[in-house]
Amino acid sequence: MAEANGKAPAATDGAARHKPTEKIGSVVSTKMAKTIVVEVSRRVPHPLYKRIIKKRKKFYAHDEQSTAKLGDVVRIVESRPLSRLKRWTLAEVVRRAAQVGAQPSELDVKV
Image (tube, rainbow, N blue to C red; front, side, top):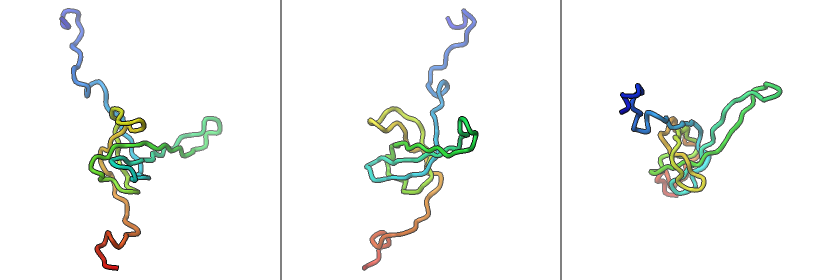
């Protein structure tokens, strides 16, 4: 029937129609269970004065295995609403943060 009117058949899978939005940012909080807070920075010109300014926004993302740590640079992708604030899912950890101050319990050192 689709060939009869000269139109190609519509794609049935969702991947062909919509590519999920991705953002890259740094993790600023991991204090919630299976949730990270990612801060995404972008540089935009000021609407009136045209000076480049930094804008930033925080996104709540789902981290199932709790792989992301504080300071990591991560890639998050858009997903269905998981809670009141979470609409993003952790795709991958792009770059690990340098471990600065380790606690003695993390180093297996007797104090």
